[in-house]
Image (cartoon, rainbow, N blue to C red; front, side):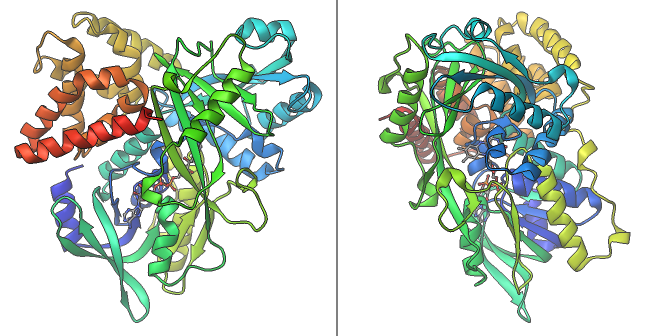
Length: 538
Ligand SMILES: Cc1cc2nc3c(=O)[nH]c(=O)nc-3n(C[C@H](O)[C@H](O)[C@H](O)COP(=O)(O)OP(=O)(O)OC[C@H]3O[C@@H](n4cnc5c(N)ncnc54)[C@H](O)[C@@H]3O)c2cc1C
C-alpha cells in the first residue's frame, strides 16, 4: 500500500488485468484476480470506497424485500454470502438481529411474513439457532417499547449482519495489495488506448501531482459503479442496456433522540421499508430510493429526503418527535442499477450484470455490497475465459482469504480479543473505545495501541486519533483528511463531536507527514469544514 511505488509500477510495467474503480466491486475483483495468479492493477479516481461503497446502509444482508419481487436467486446468493463474509472478517461483519414489527393496516400479514422469513432462512442456509422467530404483540412491544401499541399487532426477529462498508472495501484492497495487486487511489482513468480496435491500456491522471501516464494491460474491467456508463461512453460501447441511478439517503441522530434497543426494519406506509440502526452514540435511519439525474459527483441529502425519513420515524415510534434540527449527520449514495423500462426506482432489480464491448472492455454494474465476492468471481471467470488459459491459473480462492490480518476463528474470539483491548486501553483511559476500535481494525488494534506511546497528551481521544491516523497513513494509503475522517474511522457520520475535537491535531499530523504548505493545510481544513456543514445543514 505504498502509493509512490504503485505509481512507478503502473507506469513501467504491463498487466494482465487493470480494474477501474476502487469500490467494493473493483476491490473484490482485484483480490480474486491477483490470488488466481493474474498480474493485476487497480486505479481509483478519488479514495477507495469514495463512491457508493461508503454510503450504503452498511448491512451485510440477504435483501428480505427482494422476496416480494420474487428474486429468489438473488436472495439465495447474497443471503448465503452473509455467513462467508462474516467468516472472512468477523470483527467487521457482525451478527445483528433485526426486529420486523407487523401492523394492522400496513405491510404483509403475520402468516405471509412468517412464510417469507422461513423461505429467507432456507434460501440463505441460515443456522437453525438463528432461524426467524415470530413474536406476539406483547413480545414485540417488550422487545421495542418505543413502538406504538395502538398500531403494532406482532413482530418477527431474524438474523442479519452489520458492517462498515468503507472499511470492508479498504480491507479487501489491502488484501489484494498484500497478494501482489498494484493499487493506487487518486488516479483517474481519463481515456482508453487501443491497438487494432482492441483496448490495450488506459490513460491515467494522477490527481495528486497532476501528471498523466499510460497503464498497459491485456484486459480492462470497468467497475466504476455509478460512473460505469461514463466510461462505456468513452469506449463508444454504451448500449440500450444502461444504468439507472437511484439515490438513497441516511440521516443520523443522537441515540438519545431515537433510543431503539436494536436494529429495526419497518413499513413506512407507502409500500417501502426503512431501517433504524443503533450504532454507539447515534442511531442512523434510511433509506430513501428516488430516481437521480443530477451530477454524479455531487449527490447530497436534500431537505425533502430528510423530511421523508423523519416523518416515517415519527409515525412509527410513539413519543418520538425528531425534527430537522436533531440531525447530526447524513450521507447520500447512488445505486448503480440496470434500467428496466417502466419500473419505478424501488422496483428495479438489484441483480448485477456484465457488459462486454467489441473493444474487449468488460463492465460490471448492479449488485450489492454483500454479494461482492460472487460478482468478482463471475467477472474474473469471464476475464480468464476470454483471454487466458485457465489451466495456468488457480481457481477462485476468496472464500478463504481472511481480511484485516484476521485470524479470528469465530465471533467468540472477537469478543475475547475485545476484552483484551478493553483492558489494554484502561491505562490510557480509552477503554470505552475498545468496541469501536476492534470493529474498525480487528487485530490491527495491537499496532495502533503500540503507537499510543508516541502521542502522549492530556486529551486521550486526540492521542488515539493520532495513533489511528499514523497507522492509516502507513498502511491504508490515506492522502487527504477526508480519507481518514470519512472512510477510515467514519467519524463524519458517527461521531461529529469527536471529529470536531480531533480535526486540528490530525490536520497538523498530516501536514507534517506530507510536508504540506500552510496554503495546502488551510485548503484541507476548509474542505473538512465543508463536508461537516454539508452533512447536517438543512
Ligand atoms: C443508499 C444505499 C444503501 C445500500 N445499502 C446496502 C446494504 O446495506 N447492503 C448491501 O449489500 N448493499 C447495499 N447497497 C448497494 C451497495 O452499496 C452497492 O451495490 C455497492 O457499494 C456498489 O459498489 P461499486 O464498487 O460497484 O461502486 P462504487 O462504490 O461507487 O465504486 C466505484 C468507484 O469507481 C471510481 N471511479 C469512477 N470513475 C472512475 C475513473 N474514471 N477512474 C478511476 N476510478 C473511477 C469511483 O470514484 C468509485 O469509488 C446500498 C446502496 C445504496 C445507494
